[in-house]
Image 1 (tube, rainbow, N blue to C red):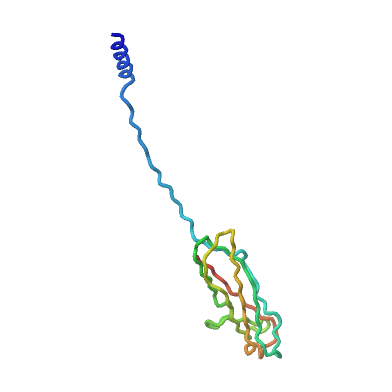
Image 2: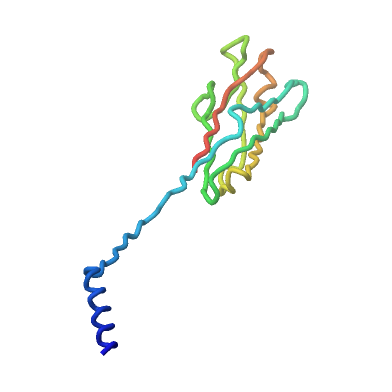
Length: 153
């Protein structure tokens, strides 16, 4: 009988607590996108040919380097415009003392690759050439131009 009283008391106690509550869940989807981007380490660089001597029968060359970084794994392409004093697709420097005088030149660089991340910059080496035939009859003076490089991921 004692057992029966204990069982009835336990059932009464459980019934007094009320119905059991049901649990519920919610799954949160989390996402983000790392964008492909590229940035040059500096805004300007200089490609200086120095003094061009018309008495020499050699082409003039110059080189420079600049650094940039791209998002890790992002394919990039580098392009350049044709400068401030171009004639069609021909890149030219203009004589500062005589705006009718120009010397054409070319630039070359590796224009594509894959980014290695912000903490691993890439060095871009640029080489320029002025053909002797293009400056042998040029007027004396300082020649200059500005070419803009653009990097796109």
